Picture (tube, rainbow, N blue to C red):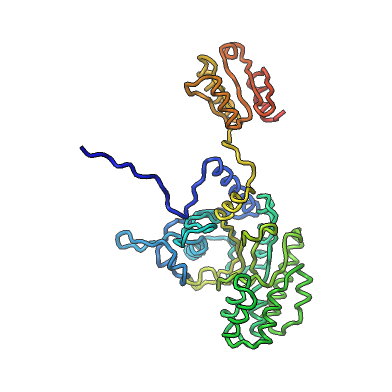
Length: 438
């Protein structure tokens, strides 16, 4: 006789799986982020999780190629998306003639990276992206709008952040002005890691590039400058006569003027020339948001300006600016540090408990109340006492008890489980009492 083998239930590492009560909080927070994007007239986009490998890997390289989930189905070479930007580029290139510019889209979706799973790093995670795409040109107002949205998103999430902003043209121009234009990428790559490797190691790495020691000191000095926008801009105004450098300063002043007009909270933003963001496609404004009281969290939102979104898919120029929140990582950090809003066992507003043979009446009441709030009937074949005990354990705020007398009189017993108060009311008055929370 064959005995079936019980398979031990388990999941892949690096994939978040939440209990329903925490998933409810997760979804509520996502909804708040979406609402900020929608308020700024961004439109939703949902691109496929699977893309042709030729498309998805067109702009990658390096570690991304090693991390991508890739497989063949028949003769088709397929990848799972590792971010939401390349699918956006493909979408814009395919539909460029049908879009209205600037094209403002947001996308909230899961992406996949086959990197080593560890604390704070997931193989499947939700990204919340918003991008503004122009046709041939894009006003710097778009940069300011993205920065303003970062402020509003984290206000909605009740998280105190500081958004650190810079402009890559400032550093590109400064490096060019020192005479190292051909080594700008290598220099920026080292400077971008200075907080991880330290100043001493950064200097050592720059020396290996044959950078003059006096110039190394100048580079270290400029990327450590941060503070109020105008204070820093005025301080570095005459550090270089390079045209690219001057362009970066001008762009930052213009973005700042728009931020002021938008009513940005100056306590939530600072100019930090150490913000570089290593990706080569950033060409102007760059930014990273941090939680000042939890700098160990690292960056909780980042983004910036890029000159050409879809260069691998079309010869047309589509400049853009965008932001991205790695939400799964952020949620995990908040959860691990007990920083989530109150987590209830469920989202139920009202439970109706039958007392005796009154289930039909309870279901009719559920039909009435469910039009206005989240309501359920405790229809299990258990004792009244155990049902009341369970409702209390689940932190259900209101319970209606329906016995034979209630069926006859249509006057129901409503119990406020939080205040331990009890009322005899019509169903309409029960609803008013629950909604008003008196």
